[in-house]
Length: 214
Image 1 (spheres, rainbow, N blue to C red):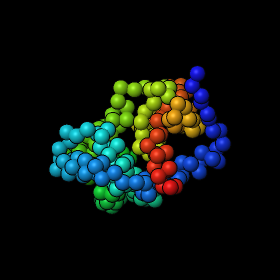
Image 2: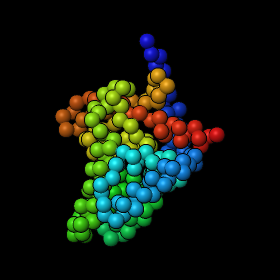
Image 3: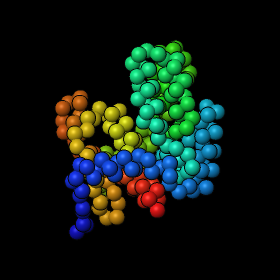
Image 4: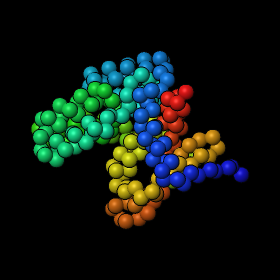
C-alpha cells in the first residue's frame, strides 16, 4: 500500500507557497528548454498559434525565463481595469506578458482591455492564448485523485485554473505520495454550490524550490 504523508500546518503551507512562487526566478536553467521556448515564443509573437501549449509551459518552467508575472503588477493592472483606465491597463499587461508570456491571468487582463478598446484582433489572440494554456492543464483529466492530477508549473496556475472553472477554494493542503507532490484543493463549485476536491501535481514548482535552495 502506498504511503501518503499530509502536512496540515497552515503556516507551513503558506511559507512553502511563498517560496515556490519565488523559486522559478532562481531555479536552474536547462539550455535545451530555453531554446525550445524561444522558438515557440517567436512563433506565437508572429501570430502563429499552432504550438504545443503544454510543452510551451513546461519548457518555460525549465528555462531562464519567468513564467509568472509580478504580484504587484497583477494588483495594479486589476485596479486600472476596475477604474476603466483600459489604455494604461493594456500597456502594463503587455509589459508583464513580455516578461512572463505563459501567465494566463495576464492574457486575460489584456483580453479585457483590448475588448474595451475595440481591438478585436488583439483580443482574439489573447483569448486563444488563454484557451490554449488552460486546455494544456486540463488535458483529458478530471483532477479528482493523485493519479489524475492536473500538472502545473507554479501555484498561481492552480488558482487561475480553478477561477476559470468557477471553483472557490476553501482549503489547501500539500500531500506527498509515491515520490510525487500534490496540492489538494477543497473547493466549492460556485455554479451549483457543490463541494469538490481537486488535485494538482506540483512536482515542477517543488523542484524549482529545491533548486533555489541548493
